[in-house]
Image (tube, rainbow, N blue to C red; front, side, top):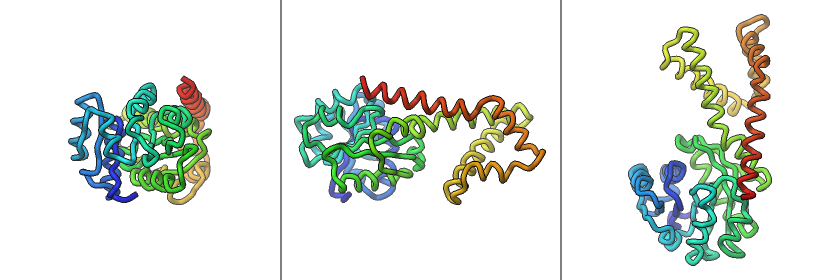
Length: 271
């Protein structure tokens, strides 16, 4: 993607701000090449403050000036926004939708036959440049469009291309996953406090432990089971703790959470 091609955000919430900051930080665009629209003044002010980019209340204005559009609104608003900007969208536009659960077909139908659309599922760690993002190409999206999506979303973490049928599972796993991780960190922190640690220290240790474990798996290629076995000495403290986790059904609970979130994503897509 050339810095000569402006990028527009339809919606200026936290995820839009996180993505814009990532794109700017990576040098993919300059602040004067970014424009975001939002009906809420508070969102516009926050977006401008965090990115130094321009904002507007008019979605049509974004579509008129930008050739790469990021649809960053709530799922139930997606079709309405696309129908609003349709008069300004041409085959020269690329739409990247991060509206959870809204299928490519519905996005394309809200525009026109031939519209170039990519459906994207990032997650909130994009706020710190550590997103796990998956994207799927629409019927008329090109390999150049895939390269643009890859370049943009790799600037805020890891990005992978998948078939659209997998995006609901991605939503259930990595889209909702930061909430599961936050609950685990909170629970570990509470346990540390119960064991006598100061709250701030318990939270720091819990968060760093999960961060370190994740990096170890990603950077060494270790299977999680191998990492688990490396710290589980016979008759030791870790295996005693793991026994309690198995008794409480932690694995099953996490698997059920991902499954429920995946099904909910599918339901949203059918609405």
